[in-house]
Image (cartoon, rainbow, N blue to C red; front, side):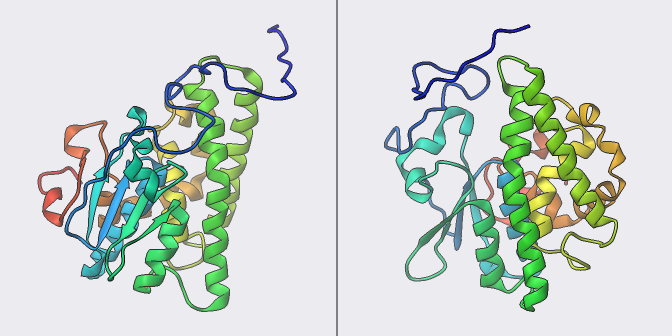
Length: 283
């Protein structure tokens, strides 16, 4: 049995914890280098990476363009979080939390920032009047499932994903603890999707856009060293049905490859500046 760790009364940072991302993780905020961000000609400037949180926003923007909202045109610039690009001064000015995605709305006279993926989805939904109903009851349902995802995402990523795939040591307790919670999250979604087509009801909304990038990769074994096997995700049939329907949407297929820098080359799009950038891609 491993030695029991006794937490100090006052924790201090005196060495890297090891594992993936250890070299960039610190207990302090703020910029680490002076580096301005590139700016394109479109109304929205997105600085992101095709992680689940980043994909939420590119799906939303592509869905808006699919509906004919030309005002939703955007430039997408890759922020390589493994290299610490989120700590450049320009990015920190957009998001003091140094997490992707960050969006600058330059559609009006005065540009302004929106950070945190859930906030970005709400901003775009309200600005264009899409994917967020105005009826109070329906809106409350959408917002509830949206913020359900905001609250559960850290348990999947920073909890299960970290200890199962990225931590330098594999400890039974944290893996079991977060695997259990991840399965519970899937069960919540599965039970809901057994009674409705989408999470908030019969209509596709930002609640689905927020949850899809986190839940979908588990169903196909494309996340955390094929955690699908470890978590037996196949048992969540209603989630699987929902994933397949959303994954087939043209806007979703495009949005999932924007700012993607890994995998098959024809399924990567490091930068996106117009619809022409998707030509020749496997979508």
